Image 1 (cartoon, helix red, strand yellow):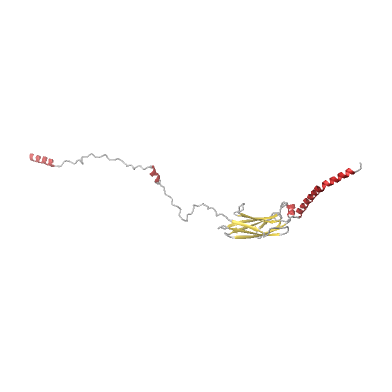
Image 2 (cartoon, one colour):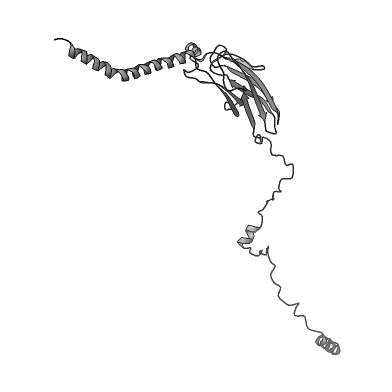
Length: 249
């Protein structure tokens, strides 16, 4: 019995001691520990896109704008010229006008309005394809409606018969006394605008009327009478004084 106990003690003495790691105190468990992210400077934050930010790609070729977008209409470029091929006119003569309208732009102009104001002394006017307004009135007007294709030239014609400017003045008051020219004006209007896109005019000299000649002759008579009085007046006064001096008392 003693021998068994001794052997047991000897065996226990020769056995290795317990490991230190086995008896090392365990660190307490980390409860819901979340490691903190490193601090980022403000300059870095500004460089980073915000949450949900999606950079916009540039519009591709053939980009169609959103519904309701109305692009600006192209500029209209129209010219007009009018002539009757002469520089003077007189009562009873007919003036034949040629109006040339040129659309210089790359797009067509629809429903353009071309208006010609006839001379103030016009007694009758004609214009093929136009509406003539103001019949029997001193100032008559011809109005055309026409489409002007891109880069196209349109030609219109009109005629006006002139009356005597003094007689027209006395009857209607449409031409001022002293009117010395027959003036015709043509304007082109686009998109029902009240402001013309282009205008042109033609002037013809008018001869003096009999009334003007009479008025001039009246002034000439008064001028001649005044000159005669200035020349002969002093001699007449001296002659009257001599006769009074020699008369018997």
